[in-house]
Amino acid sequence: MAPPTEVKAPGMVPDELKHEPRSKGIATARKKKPKELAVITECCTGCAGSPACVEYCPVEDCMFWVPDEDHPPFGRIQIDPILCIGCKKCLSKGPDGCFLDGCPWDAIVMVETTEVEKEVGPMAY
Image 1: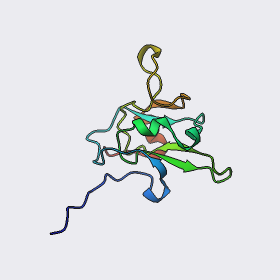
Image 2: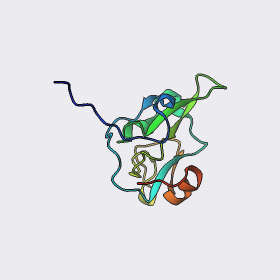
Image 3: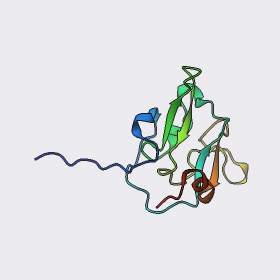
């Protein structure tokens, strides 16, 4: 008998465009659409290919490396909005300005899902 195949939640960004390092974790579709989604700002440096934010993301392939084609070996991190669950584990700032474990450059912000949908289109879940 063949082993069961794992069904991965489909993202907006095709897998072939997602480079390592990529976030690891749950691979099932999110259960509801979050109120806010994580968005990477232009301040992202990619942390020299070893980004802290990716390590804290609990969703498979939600955060991933995108090489800078004009300036190799540099690159940055991107977030797949369809896979983001809005958990805020990738952030560096918590309530009342406390420091968390995520992005050391403060290059990730939480944006209302409706604002992200203006850029990427309506999300079903």
